[in-house]
Image (cartoon, rainbow, N blue to C red; front, top):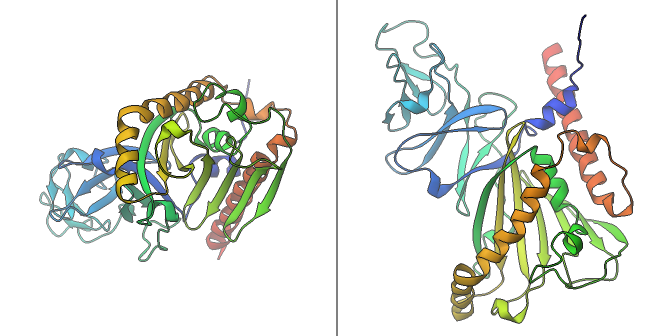
Length: 344
């Protein structure tokens, strides 16, 4: 019997992450003196630091026979394949083939390269549609991660499952009232709500009508060359000085069954208040926040891969529906552009 399965190209495109966007891929402190191999965005990628500490990234695939470049030594801005000594520069160019000097592989540029940026304690890669892009757009971080008026901690985890389930979870403020009802910061507020959307220059807010600063009451989606989700929850007095607690999130597909989950936990304070909060966070509050995240992780990991194909949505899910539609339309537009280039 012929078992033909149809693969939705839009679904396949989204599963690996949209093109021409920045994505966080690894906390900075996880890349040391040796190359690191990671799976992100549909690729196996080799990351390394040169002699000045700058981060470089190539597809972890030697153009000679496909051996992992990450297993070889670092030669400044190049990696040397351990299999036959082929050297590949950070821009994807083969600079040396010691076993066959002057062969056609030498001087060619067959390896996919990735532009990198290191900011807010993380390494970001630009997921370009083309293998070699000379100048990517600027990586723009939310002010909470750049302003001296804010203090933040990076929180990184890897969760089993599709990264889009993590996005859906954060674009669903109402789950805080139920799943996290025993949390020290999400135990208050009404158990019912009406939600509205509000457009911004870079995306939109999805927020409870008539309730603010009581629970997890709103989420903002931002698209500014990187996709961000921002939310805010109130902090009890035991949480130390400062305003409400802001969380910035960005999520990257590692594979079809694994997600790289980045959250930055932020508060608007400086001086002694900043020092006090950072001390309290490391000694008392961080464990509580991990406990809340663990509730999300367990629930999402136990969801079936096709759970979003068998849903019965209601008014609280308007934010999820809008963001899914936004991502799907972006994927369609990118695929149409790719098809047009191939035909021309």
